[in-house]
Image (cartoon, rainbow, N blue to C red; front, top):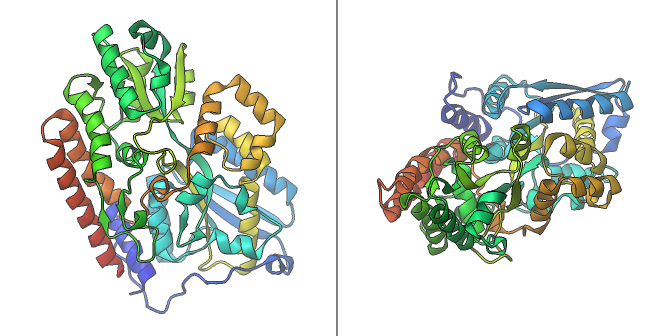
Length: 460
């Protein structure tokens, strides 16, 4: 059985779909190492159809379709994009794994950050780095923001082009901070935020100081904010990939422990893993500060909340090496089973969607951060930021985040499994049911087992 098919079977099992285990012959095609250039599209005898699958719904999905419609209009008779919403990201990747087995993958797969390790290992795609080199008149990869580019890079190659990018932010209730006499200048560090949370809860006992969703992304953020690797070696981005989860280092223990103690001391509000539950508590004034995705900006506004501010995610490590890890999704270009003309046409679509003009419009409509740095020079974007300070905070944090191994996040096909075993252990530590060191050690061991199981089943 080929490596590509073994990896597909691993992910199918991990996401608990009803798909059967992988099968097929060992001589099936694998992704080419060379990328086709402009001549492949120029020699096409008729219009080239590009299929694009995604899991982006709501306003962002509508904005994406609008930009695809514009591309189709501009390229009528030459390239036609057929985009299909595949449900949630989990639904979309499940359908993709089935398509790999059936040799019916889309031309472009837009999938979320946590599936990056699987897409790399599945062997279906040609790297963005190779496509850009072969088609220099299209997307300039140097314009992609370093933090976003770093996340989707492995072994020195950009694997996919980010489309919609989010980041963690700190949201604060302005009135509650003022009532407690909190100095906002102290909120740039995790220790400062913890001290402010305690001060608020003491001054206004009926209000909790802070809420943090208990899903896996936030423990990854605490690690990156401490400048620590989440998996080793090199956060899975070196030759050979990740071999172990890393959760028990001093910097991580201090960061996670700082947050856990707020909860065990009754200062933090436990709303479980649901980020929407945390948001509802914040909007209702039950908690003064909230860690949540930048995607919460639109939801807070829709709820009609006034008198709040969005601030950068606080760090516990050195700002030269520590920072936030991005979320969102990226565009992967499938090569196996797709003609060279289709691949080049797909790259045209990806280049269009990552262009400065499109990213500006898409960001304003969706609330995601623009990944193209050329947007920063747009007068209309500057006017938008002046009228929308939340977006300005997000943009500055995105620009200021260093591209380091810590901020690139852990790249492994086992990430879904890792999150599934880390979260229960952290919930026990945050509730006081388990000592922090014991929970961290158990989570690290369980996560390492997930990585090793994945590597064994994938033949790595």
